[in-house]
Each structure stands twice: as structure tokens, then as C-alpha cells.
Length: 412
Ligand SMILES: Nc1ncnc2c1ncn2[C@@H]1O[C@H](COP(=O)(O)OP(=O)(O)O)[C@@H](O)[C@H]1O
Ligand SMILES: [Mg+2]
Image: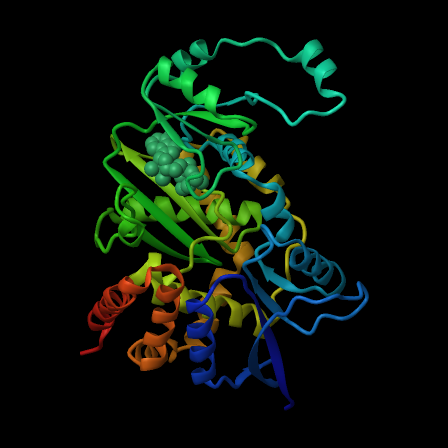
């Protein structure tokens, strides 16, 4: 029986807190997992940014990436490592790059999800280019913005078709406001989307591989309170629906890590924002949900690295489209889509792996999140984001929430 080591790379940007916790907990697990006749250990390393030969081999078995969506050198290094070395990476860089909000709406509308009515409108102005004037003169039709607003109904939301982070999102109450906001929208290509109004619940479902976590969300609260600490805010049927929705989206797009926002109105859940394949992972937003994220990351990455889970380079949408084409009611279709997700994520094998080889993770993480090292990690993130005079206060706030989580999950 040989002893082998799997290498997990962390491809990081401004992340401070979760990588420290991740490294600490993996270190404390001291893994020696029997797998296919070998004893497998795990090493974690931060990926550095440097020149690379396209033919040079990749030393990692799995990479947790936070840079693909904006940092090109890392994205292209990851792409070459997938193509040439069979790297497993979270997330699929092609799907992050090309599947923005608009694509995700269109695909999920086709699968039958109740996405609110959404229009795309050409931008108010353009970057000048030699071909622009003849193109617009010949083909750009004058349109009546008011008529589109009327068709969708008010209130509606104007937001960038590839949006994220609340950039340029406006809630629009009437035609006058629509015209004003459009005049101000500049070169941004916008969606106009019917508001889910009034909604009585707003939930984010975070998906990490086959694992999901529901959080009640309050969009009106300051950043550190948007992820609420509420519990039991949905029925078990609703929880299953939201989880199936999130897993369907994630497996369709090849996103192992993503979050899906849904709003409930009159008993129906409307997904409105689910192209978030580099979700907020910071303790300053997640606080009591942060340990869940760190543990989910550890389970999924260790499973993929140790078992050398095969990375799906292509997305293969056909099975989803085949189900969409049937006459089954939507809830049945969604169950079938989710079954594809579970098959692709290998949920059964994953759960068995965790039960057999990571049975002590909960306890190790629970202990860790009570240590000064964990508190220092929280403080380091707070210090990077908050003004000096608020550092102690907010460190204490997030720490207390994590300790409340520990108390609730304490045994006995
Ligand atoms: N159709 C909608 N109905 C109701 N509220 C919406 C709708 N679209 C967006 N919002 C509100 O605007 C916020 C930002 O829009 P969202 O689509 O989530 O964009 P981003 O990708 O920037 O987060 C949402 O969190 C929600 O509060
Ligand atoms: Mg959003």
C-alpha cells in the first residue's frame, strides 16, 4: 500500500478569512484516507501567479478558484490545466466567462422555471467604432420604451444583463422613471424585469457540489445583516424545491459553487438572480453561516481530490432539454433535472465518502471555530474592510454569531 499525496490549490484574490480556516482545519484533520489500495494524504497550497509554459504539467489535483471571472492569467492557466492535465476546478472557467445572468435566465426559462418576464433593450449609447453608424442606421429600430414598460407592468427592475453586486440596479415605479433611468443608463445593456411584488420571503440557496444551504435574506439590511440568522423560514417542501432549483442551475452550467436568489409571492418561488458563480465567501457577510461554507468547501474539495473525480469539460445540456420537452408538470421536471445534478455530482458516492472518511470534520471544525486562530482570521478580514474605529466592534459581532452557531451545534 503506497502513501500518496493529493494537492489542492487555492487560487485566491482578496479572500482572507476562509482560506486560513480551510487550511487550518484540513491540517488538523491530518488525513490518511484509504483509497484504491493507497493511503491518501492531502496538501493545500496557495496558487501563485507566474509565467507558465503551456506544456508544463499541473501539480494540483483540484483547484478552488476565486479569480477566473476577472483575472485573465489565472483563468487561462486553469483552462490549460483542464485541457492538458485533467484538473478538477471549481468552477468551470468557460461557464463562468460566458454564462452571465441573461444566459442563465434564458436557459432556465426554457426548463420551465418561473422567472419573471424579462426584456432586453439595446443600450442608450455606444462605444464609437467605424461600423457603428451604418449598423444602427440600417438596423436599429426606434422603439417605444413606454410600451415595453406597459407590457411588463410596474414596478419593474432595470438591471445590467450581465449584472452582479447590485451594480446599476433600479426599481422603477412608472413610465417617467423608466425613461429617466434609461437616459442615465449609458452604454450598459439592460434588462427590464417585472418585479416580484410584493414578495413575502427572500431566500438565497448556496450550492457547493451537491451540498446546499438556505439562508433567509434581507436586501434592505446593511451588508453584515443581509444574511439573516432566521431559522425554519420555509416548509420542507419549499426547502426541497429551492435546493432542486439551485442544483439544477449549478449542474446545468457546470458551477460547483454558486448561489441562487428566489423571491416568494403568493406561494410561488421566483428565481431572480442565479448567475453568481463566485459567491460571497466572506465572514463579514456570512457570519454564522461561514462555518457551513468552510466545511462544505473542505468536504467537496477533498472528495474531488482524493477520488480524482473526473471534471466535466463540456456541459451537455441535452438530457435537461429532453426532460423539458415532456408534458410532465414543472415540479416533476425539476425533480428529474435535480436527479441529473445528483448523478453528475455523484451525491451518493460523496455522502458515503464523507461518512466514512470525514466523519470527524464536524467536531474538528467545531473545535477550531472556538480558537484564537479562528478569531484572528475573522479579525483580519474585518480589518481589511472596516474603518479602524469599527474593527473591534465588528470582529466581536461576527465572532459572537459564530459562537452562537457553536452553542447550537454543541453535542449533549
Ligand atoms: N424581479 C425582481 N423582483 C423584485 N426584486 C428584484 C427583482 N430583481 C432584482 N430585485 C432586487 O434587486 C436586487 C439586485 O438585483 P439582482 O438581480 O439580485 O442583481 P445582482 O446580480 O446585482 O445581485 C435583488 O437582491 C432584489 O432585492
Ligand atoms: Mg443578487
